[in-house]
Amino acid sequence: MNSGATAERVHEALKRRIMSREFRPGDRLDPAVLAAPLSSSVTPVRDALHLLTGEGLVETRTSGGFHIPALDEPALKDLYDWSAQLLALATRGWPGPDAAAIAQGSGQDDRSIAERTAAIFLSIARRSPNGEHQRAVDRLNARLHAIRTVEPQVLDQVDDELAAVASAVAAGARDTLRRISASYHRRRRRAAADIVRAVYRAG
Image (cartoon, rainbow, N blue to C red; front, side):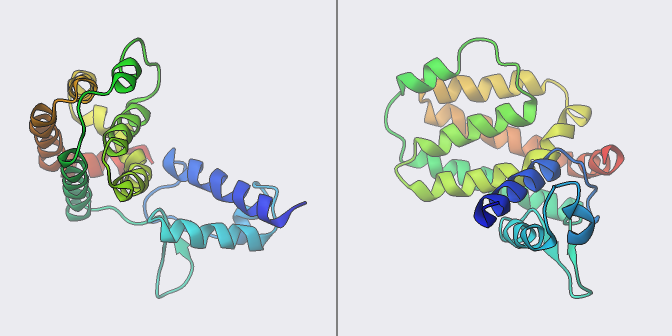
């Protein structure tokens, strides 16, 4: 089997498992334990964990080993602040309304809240003339995915809120989007302690 293909497959499989909350914050990730369920040897698993560490989805500790990062209220507030700042930067250089974005925002969408949020935020970044915004939002989407899966347990009207963001994106309404984005992130920042508790309960 091609070792490069194996490493890529293991990386994607582990990433999906982390984003779907298969592990709890703080859990240790032992390459030897993970290898067999992934139909892999230990080396590709270790390589994948190093890559995921660089992506912020895994951390290494001075005591040794790989772990899912612990989550607390200040850290979550920092992530929400970073999300708000990235979206503000991305919208600053937007062109006019984008027909493709309008078409994408229409119709029934059966994806989860976390998946829809990631797609909408990534579409905001893609319309920026600076490609670094897209790469940064893509990485942050992965880090926030597990958290977004529990937000509806804490916050009401999440679907309506997301629909308002999507509508502003589709219309290319920068000022409206900035206002809605500020409110979106402010709500989550205020609820950060409850969201952290929900993440640990659901883990």
